[in-house]
Amino acid sequence: MRDELMIVERIHRDLSDVRWPEPQEIRARARRRRRRTAVAATVVLTLAGVSAFTLVSAERESAPPSLTAPVRGEITADSLLQPADLPQPAQMALSESGLRESLRLDDVLGYCRSSQGMLPVWQASRWSRSQTLLRVRPAGDVGTSNDVLLSQDLYRVTPEAADAFFTDLDRLLAPCAEWRSVGPYEVAGVSGTGEAVHRWTVVQRDFAGDGAALLRHTVSPPRDQKTGKAIGGAPAPTSTAVVRVGDLIAVLSLGRQGTERDLSRIAAVAARRMCLAANPPC
Image (cartoon, rainbow, N blue to C red; front, side, top):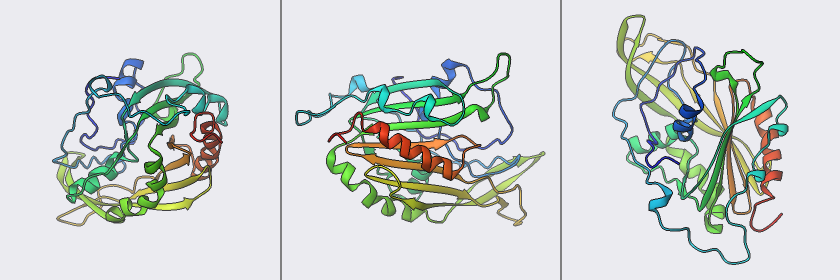
């Protein structure tokens, strides 16, 4: 992992397709891939004043606390979803592992809490492994952001943190059940201050593993704060599945073409894969 990564940056949205970055750039952006947005269409609504935090590399941290033997420690690659688990041809774009990574559900959710004077309260993991799977492209096909099929972060946490995670989830989401974001925008040469309302809700529970939740993030159509005039359409909702098996917690999201039904189904497959590395064993 890189020594220093920024985990919060200015939030933006551009719904037009972009070329998929080179592998080096994918790695540089790996920890930021689930950024959510506050605008739609060609509108860019930027939240100002976002602080930047620095993660210290695993090498500068002390080793994780010892676990009571016999247990599994480092998360193996076979406990992640495999390309064959997806309903369409997929290929690995990125896989990385780490120590003491924060178990983050959504960076915009974290900013929602911090903007109200609350800590994000992300749990620190013992070990983690992350991956991104991309659509297999024919030779000569130009890649776009639509190539992303799946993002998965898999964390090993303490037994106490695993037990408390879903109990604390509603408390974590409550301050952001209806959060109004405000920031400058510029579209077609016109600029001003816009606002949009974010909502996070749990729409499904206990559908996989030892516990699971499907989170939906919706954003209202942004409007000019002064005139009330709409400055774009509503972005499509985004969904995140969180699954627990033993002391492992997985955070999963699909690309733009994936549905919540697809996500809950692939989360059940992920839970079976997690059994290969969970404590206690399945």
